[in-house]
Length: 113
Length: 113
Image (cartoon, rainbow over the protein chains, first blue to last red):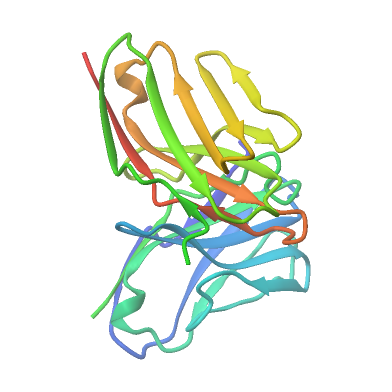
């Protein structure tokens, strides 16, 4: 089944403790992206990647890092999480820069206390 | 600066009637527009899209209209069904921003039986 898989689904962590949210897609898509969803703000793009080793900042990249060492994986790294990074995170992939629509994962609910 | 805006946080319609969801954008460089649907506890799913060279695209019960001069697009659902109750996001992309997809805040649609 074609899908984008994120892990974990739920995570509660403490301020300053480094964490990684994994994302993997099995559709051989070139484009991958991370979004966060917050009430009243919709979906905001954190980082995106156009191919292996090619990444760029979205609208809200501060406090996040990404890497794209393999085509299928695009992990999101929070080096020192803070409470304002409490949010619902989505990973997505696309064959062609979103023209055919990004396929989204099921989301990761992150709480930073 | 919110480049894509959905000014109605919620909309309620009766089953069988038309639902009209609206979206405005400010960036004249946007050349592709998409609508996504999101159920609780799931990732957004691609619904329908339109290129800036068109003013209408239809897919079954869903039609998207684009008015470039007004920088406005709308999604029509006819007839509305209770299963259409979800959050709807519009999104926009520009060829100069490869991979960057900007979303609106979302509109929650409730279709009453």
